[in-house]
Length: 132
Image (cartoon, rainbow, N blue to C red):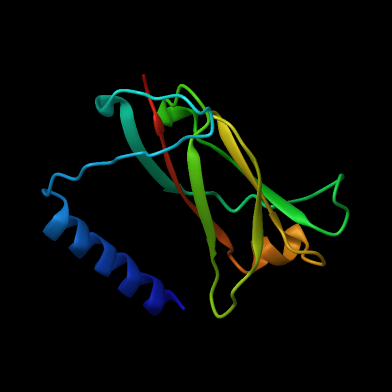
């Protein structure tokens, strides 16, 4: 397991070194707030959440993970994509709540926070939004 994680991390670092200097353009065609923003305001922000899955008190048979994205500086709700990095499984998650400060993802039914944390489920996310 550690060998696999080191290989993936090494590959990602190599790709960043090789392609990190390439200028990329983000173009957001439509956004959750329905407003148009000037091109220099577009931002891509990404990260990996901590191992802090918690059992839901609202959805009793599900766990959830909330990630603080406030450091991205979005001025409105961004477009967000998520997935869960888990060794040897393909967990199903649902993006439940999104705003410019945080995102919350729930697991499928019958998944406890204890299970997700013990199995090192890492929430990976990418947000596209506007900073002005």
